[in-house]
Length: 80
Image (tube, rainbow, N blue to C red):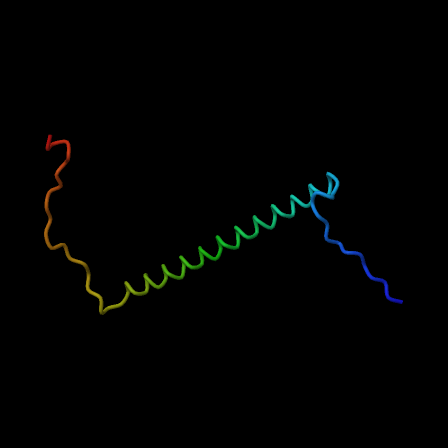
């Protein structure tokens, strides 16, 4: 005997107040999860780039930066 299960997908405007609340909560949870996932991806990318930059600075073939010339800073207020 083949019993087909009715579709469980509901349109939000056909739901009662409890169904709409659960639907809105699920949508909010899905959006929040996507934001957390995107933030975690961005943080891991920044961490990997920072690690590469740090390792590059430890390269003995790179010389330290040197100040060539220093000039005093002129305040815009003193020019008037």
